[in-house]
Length: 89
Length: 452
Image (cartoon, rainbow over all chains, first blue to last red; front, side, top):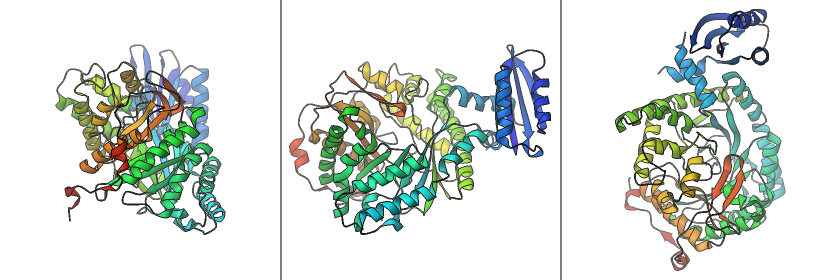
């Protein structure tokens, strides 16, 4: 399943490394990544493929939520079709 | 890759602007549940609902997790019970009401709609029995919603039914007096009721519907409000275009969710109802959208025009976003469920007369309005007659959901809690309509009903 992840947080060292290594540990493949810092707020969006993982979508989601709480990040993961539907005619 | 700002816009809509799917409603036909023994009929109804809707709530929750979109309500609508119970040799239809409630509890849904009768042209014996049992059923159950269609553009207005419903509403308020007349919040009197409405309290599974169907109601007044804040002072052409674009996005989300639910449940997709349904939460109000267009308070002069633009632009934006649009589709103006409407009533800017005018151009009618507890049944019937006339003449759905709040008067408030909100008691016209309602009979269908 293709999913879009968004990560926002107060900018600091190691956010990308932390999130991406968690995805790697879970076998989630990153297809695309874009990142910017807007007024001190780190904002990253990733297009990921969860079908490469042995974990279920729910397990991946729970792991990300767990990490977001422990590292004070705001993480969302949602199926990509919703964004394609909403922003493309 | 998708545009980063598009992605963040969607995330913000969900996180900060109350964008959600208001309801996934599973329509279930109960046509095969009729039985002369009402207890057997009730058991068949219970079994069928529990088997068809067993996975509804878990599927809804799975979609919430995978798509990251809140689905506020999971609901069930069934064939109007007056039709299913017609073959029962019993007068006590409340047995079926309890079975519906038990089934809804078992499935974990928020509401079940369809304790209904369609009497726009006249009553069957079964319709009369069902209507007589509405107050008891709404008092005994917590999840059952009831609706009665008293008029259509094709048939005219059944004034006997209008008279009867005034009494039923009064009785329902009396039997649920300990909860502020809460039973009346679960009872809708319709003109031109639609068969595929996913929203409560008026949802039922129409006679032309398939065995089972998924209908989805989207919401998003907060998103429209936020979008209009970016076009302050600009012309109405820009306002209309902004609402259309926003409605398109909201409806697309509903369409994706509807298809996912349909696929996961193995049930055909019916329609997306693209209604702006407010909640009592701040920033999720239809009234505030109207005010954003330049009105000091919702209810002042200009409100009807603002609502007409909103209602029309929502439909235009939404209709291209979904394969099948249906239900009520437009803007809802329930008073108790809309923080801005409540404020407007409290400050005296919005009264029943203005709300009635607004119902000419919105998607439903006088909704969630508390009136003084001593309002007569005849006055309530007359309010219903006025709304039905607006619906019949304008070829649109109108509805009345009023609560004659027991022992309350103008200036008081009734708390219903949750999505039903808090209703300020509104003034009604004190002059009597008793002789008008006592006439009975039918108001004939308008000339434009003859379109063949």
